[in-house]
Length: 479
Image (tube, helix red, strand yellow):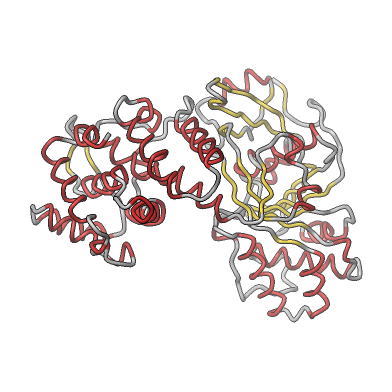
């Protein structure tokens, strides 16, 4: 078996045009895989310099393999099982700015640099007032980026053609807006002047993005077989699902510079990210939140098995297509395609996604993912969505704890005040008190849900049915 490096494997030299803050599994299996495809199928012809955002990271491992690694895509593509391996060669080098700060700052001096892409975790886009301009480097990601941009501004004497296009991929809504605000805070804190501020505003673009791909990461249990198949000793293999979506809130001229659509990739340049964010939260996260307690209390442990189940599968379809989809404002055919893609992802034969792993913090999840749909459905249809109401009753029942019919333990996990509330309510032995008490908990919902017409009675009726007939029979009653 060969070592993996540029002596043993082909590696194309391309101009360094992208600075990437982050070297983790997600960026390597998503952004770098997308850039690889753009290089293969268009004239994009760009390589990536990776910058490690914190002082401990993986750049040494990357450089040991000359920044080569394989992406293992697994899943269903239009019903066909796919399990592919692709060598990604787009990273030219990887830097640790904590030990290579001069090399890091010199990236700003390269005239061909055009893009900055990041994924520094949700906590990464934060303003740290203790950062100083002369730090080598600033500890926060926005601080490092401001240092880099200011150095570029000075190097090219404010040349407007040397601005950068910035795509943050952190999993927060309107990440680009947040990053831009934070950069303005550093411009002010460090007194960088109106000239730089104007150059940043007019020459650079910071664009909000939504990213979507499940990336399990390093395939520990399969790695020996994968290395045998590759005949390379690759210690940076990263596994990911086939589905990918990158929504970028940017004008079409940016799409011309970043021609992902020409490579047949699911990368959309749109005027507003908001409806796509809402679509993902509603049609992917929303069904996850309610299918999990319904499936678990019916004796089903894995998301894929829930989708394949004769009864639970119909319940999932009802919630997605008949209820939640009716609350969204994008074109119907677009929503149906996305929902079918979601079902294909839920059915991934390579991923055993335990429903109990989704159950953590179910009440806050229901509040953000399902409650808006419940209210909109009631407003539009004049009646409550039965599947979503049953999902809420299933969560409440799951939080009672105890054991399942087959003896499996039910172990809810949430904030202490939620756990205590449910314990006290279930101790009354009265489902009316349980329903009223949960729905009245404004520290969960920010309001009293007993005011929603018919909801208290509907939740109580479901709780009674689950206690008397069991979950599966209760589900059958609403199909």
